[in-house]
Amino acid sequence: MQRRDFLNRVGAGAAAWTAVSRQAVLGANDRLRVGLIGCGGRGTFDARLMRGTPVDIQAVAPDNYHDGNLDPRLKEPRNVDIAGLCDVYGSRVDRAKQWAPQAKTYSDFRAMLADKEIDAVIIGTPDPWHAPMMMLACEAGKDVYLEKPVMYRLAEAKTMVDTVRRTKRIVQIGTQHRSADHIAEAAKIIASGKIGEVHFVRVWNYMSTFWGNPPVPDSDPPSDLNWDMWLGPAPKVAYNQNRLNYRSYMDYTNGIISDYGNHRFDSVHQIMGVDTPKNVVSSALRFNQKLAGDILDMQTATYEYPSFILSYECCNYNGHGLGGRTPGMKYYGMRGPEDRPHGMAFYGTEAALFVDRLGMELYPEPVPPEPGKRFARGAEWKPRIEKFKMNEDEPTPLHTKNFVDCVRARKEPAANIEVGVRATAVACMGNVAYWTGRKLNWDAKTFSFPGAPEAGKYLFRPYRKPWDLVKFG
Image (cartoon, rainbow, N blue to C red; front, side, top):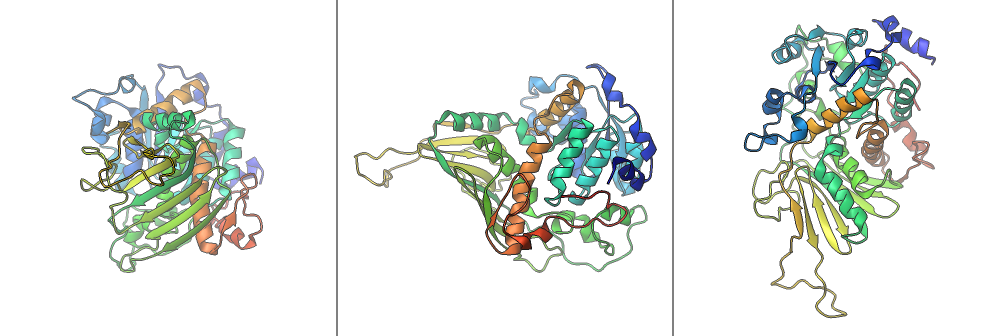
C-alpha cells in the first residue's frame, strides 16, 4: 500500500499530516507540546513524569524523593506541556483534566494527530492499538513515546521499524529500565568478566493475585464510552465491563510473558549484550477457570541464545518467587520479608548476579577448600554478598526525560524502536511456541520460524476494518 493510500484510508485529518513539523525549530527553552492517547493509569503516569514537575513526580512517583530531595538530573526544567488528552472513555478524559486543565480534549486520536500544535504523543492504549497508532503518529510528523509491548503480533515489527526510519521520527519505547543506573552497572559487571562465564539466566514473574474479575453478563456500554473505537483493530465483540480490564484477555494482550516478561527480556538483552535467541520451547496453563478472561496463569519458556540458556517462568497464584536473601533489601512487588516476586538471575562460573527493578546483589561462588572437592557448601556456609545496590529509584522519570532530550536534539533515545521490537519479539515467540506445541527455531532477519509452517498463522491477526491499513510481514 502506498503512503497516500495509507493516509486516505484513515480519514479524519489525514490531509494535515504532510505539514512541516514544529519540532524542526524547537529549542531547549521552547515548550514541547505533548498529547496523551489513553488516559488510564499507565498513560497518566507517563504523561505526568514526562512533564516532570516536582508536583508531578511527588504525585505519581513519591519514592523518588529521599529526605525531600530528588536526583539532580530530575530538577532540570523540562519545559513540557501536556497539551492534549485523548480517550474513547469520556470519564478518563475528565479525570485527566484535573491534572492537565489547559489541555485540549479529543475523543478520536486522529484529530489529535492532525493538530499541528502537538509535537509528540504518548501512546498508552491496549496492545492491538500500538502498531497502527504509532505508524499513524509517525506519518503525521509526531514523535512517539510508546508503551510496551511494541507490537501485538510479530509480523507488525518490520513495518513499524521501517515507518520510524523513513519518517525520521524519535520513538522511545516504555521499557524504562533502559534508563536505570543499576541495570547499566549490571551490564558493566557482566562485560568485565567479574562473575565469570554466564551460560544460564533465569527470569521470573510471580504474583499471588489472579488477573480478572468474576464473570458478569454482557451489557450496553456506558454512554460516554465509544466501544467500537475501544476495540479498534481487535475482533468485534459485545461490551462486557470485564473487558476494560484488558490485560485479562488474549484479544488485547499476550499475557504475563508480554506484560511483565517484556521488561525483563529487554534488561537481559542489555545486561548480556545480546539481541535475539536462536530457538524457543514453551509450556503453559490456564489454572483459574472461575474468573473472567483467558490469559495463561502459568507459563515456562526456554530460549537458547548463542552463549547461554534463558529460562522464563511466571506463576499467577503464588507471589513468593525467589526468596529474598539480603536482610532489609526491598524487592520489587514484595509482600513479605522473604519473597522476591520478580527478577533476573545471572549464573556465572565465579559468581551469581541477582537483579530486579529496584536493585542488584552479587554473590561470589565459594571456592572448594581442596582440589577435587565437588562442593564447597557445608552446613556452616553462608553466602557472602560482595556488592549490592538497594532501593533504586523508579526509572520512568529519567526515561521520559531521555525522550524529551532526544526530541529536542534529534538523537536516538535509550530504548529505540529496534530495541523495543527485539524484547517484545521474545515474548511473542514464547506464545507461538506454546500454541504450536513444539520447539521453534527463529530467524531474526526474516522474523519467521524456518521449517515450521504451522507457526505462520500466529504471526499476524488481521485488523478489523477500517484499521486494516497496510500489509504487514
